[in-house]
Amino acid sequence: MPTFVDPFQQHQAEQLLQPALIRVVDNLRKAMEASNWIGTYEEHLLWPEGTTDAEQEQVRQIAAQLEDADPETAQQLQEQLSHLPMPFPGYELRLSQGEHTQHIDVWNLCYQVCFTHYSPDTPAEVDSRLLDEVGDVDWLALDEKAHRLVQAAFAQLSQSPA
Image 1 (cartoon, rainbow, N blue to C red):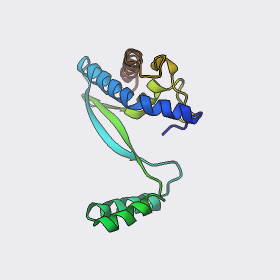
Image 2 (image 1 turned 135 degrees about the vertical axis):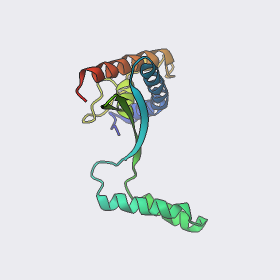
Image 3 (image 1 turned 45 degrees about the vertical axis):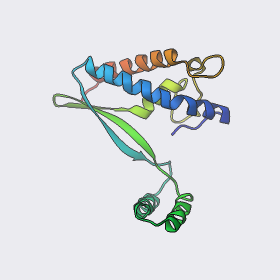
Image 4 (image 1 turned 30 degrees about the horizontal axis):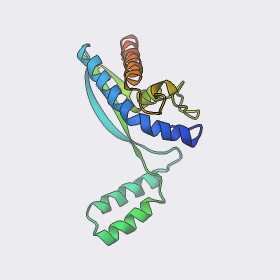
């Protein structure tokens, strides 16, 4: 999960991430249709840096207890969870072509779309070209950038060893 230069950048990112995900997934679909790659999406949990195995297990146990908890117990369990690191979903596109398999990290691709020069090691800065003069999403600019980055990701697939 990216960090941000300032709270305003985070607000803008929250505005852009869902539309970026929509455009990235749509462009991935189109790229697969135009290629001989077969893709399936896989979800996995990404934990904040520094989360211990014990904390992960504790979150899993509490989440399992929540499924069958009465309202009072559920409130207590939610309170416990609020003090633990929480995972966020990671999405990966697993592509196969015969015996070759490649992976594309969908969220990483979305971050590349939303941010200028995205790197997980530095605070993210929103690509202001993706917003219009009143701060709304510029869907055309967003789609063009998503298309360009998805095409580049697919071009890399054909160049990288399986």
